[in-house]
Image (cartoon, rainbow, N blue to C red; front, side, top):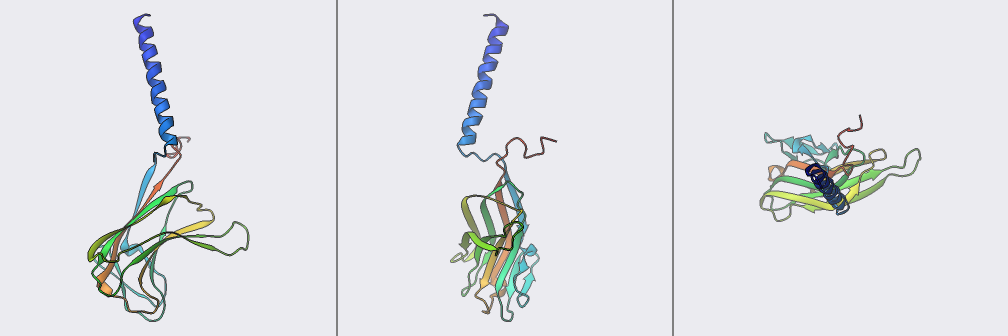
Length: 193
């Protein structure tokens, strides 16, 4: 064999090894397209018109005492079609002796072009119980493919039982991060255009 033939053979073997390795990783569940979407606490919405909400100077949101109704704040999550949700992380402060924060990742779906009822599915939950200060709550879940054409996704934080008193500045949500995977390795960055 000549030097150029040896070089070609080595290149061919190297490419085969590389492609074979990539194929084995794809079937092993390696996350190629991990994407992070961050939201600050202030971007949440009160779930009830009777709930009083305050925002602090550090992007946090807290529940103040209000009238009857839910003590829940909701963040609509923007998840692209084809992605899989597998983790939500929430940061905040919990120095309350009487209340804890409870979080739920909720999927609401209505079948396309039909009058069926909306399905409400809790995909994951976590809480701040016993944190005694700054906390990080993690809603880890098995990869869940999203369907934005028929479903919406929200993170909901419950500050107190319905109609009960909130604990003001003692419970604050400052930030949350939605972590998704785009399983399309080739076309996820509009490679096809």
